[in-house]
Image (cartoon, rainbow, N blue to C red; front, side, top):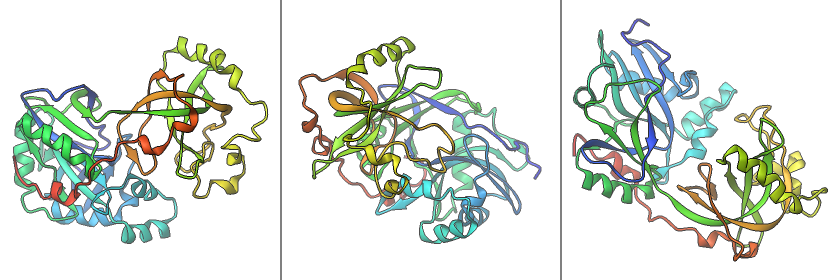
Length: 357
């Protein structure tokens, strides 16, 4: 492979802002695996955000990218899986599997798509120094004949339309909106774009915590909601605290600590067989490897209000943000019923938008 921009390349990143800024290019924020594709003739490399290769996990995309991308190019985009008209991140994570036979099976059963949204090189020319507006023009041109499962990400310079996308596209599993300055060159690993994500709140039960990797202070709170049967299900974690606050939480939660986990709703996590199909903390996976996932059980008596962006199935997709303790709420009142249901929106309509809008 001999391209003007060679792998690995770290993608340009975005920082969170509260509102959609004016005077920029706007795109949907895709919830998948960020990927930078290098193509030089028959050679295809798909680099992850960390620089590791994803090509072996998505063989169906390797052939599709050869059919739909220019012979020599570097394209920034997102790998997604669409199920039932919306993005399915759980199915996407299943694709990262060490067994080749499993990879082949899932490539046929849950094929992936690639959403292209930036062009870093074309032919013998690097476009890293070119402004976004020029890169988008070139990307639109070279992607004009692309066919599924390779797509050109819809984009607009109309902030009113971007706001409409922000409100409507969530039902298709999208994360929010990305805003990109039109004169912005491509700066790998720099947070120069802007992301506007959905945020809503929920009252959840604190049922345990993990120690921080630096020592005997709280690393994350383990959160739960009661399902329709009254069972407390593990739905995610809350982890962003200043170091001083982490130390304070150890003392604050000390009266709730259980020396013996028997009787705790999640006591079964220690039994390896219980992890099949269960939403319990503490299970090892190919994502966590040998990472220490041990946790301290707490009597599930305290309620906290957290902010979250959206649900992935029946749990928080990302780490929730602490807002305040809720001494006025009982743990039994913290159920899934309080969560806002997002109106469905077929992802095919999003991908059906072509060209500039």
